[in-house]
Image (cartoon, rainbow, N blue to C red; front, side, top):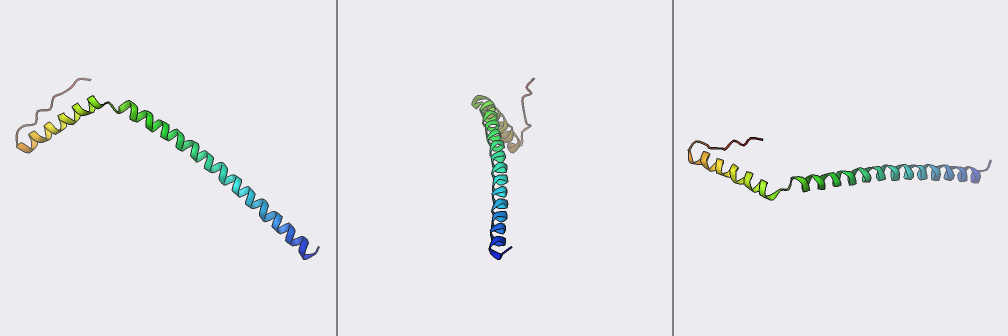
Length: 83
């Protein structure tokens, strides 16, 4: 076996391993991308379902009213809501 044959075999093996590693990385990256897409879809669904402006505004005002009562030294009068 000459040096040229050994060099060709070595380059072929290194090329094959490089191609294999690139395909494994591509498979791994596609799985991560799919999971991130699922996560973003879930996040958008959650934001849409919990972004009730009226409910959030009312809760915000109740909270700040309670803080103002505490800051003024008065007793805090937080209304209890039954669920």
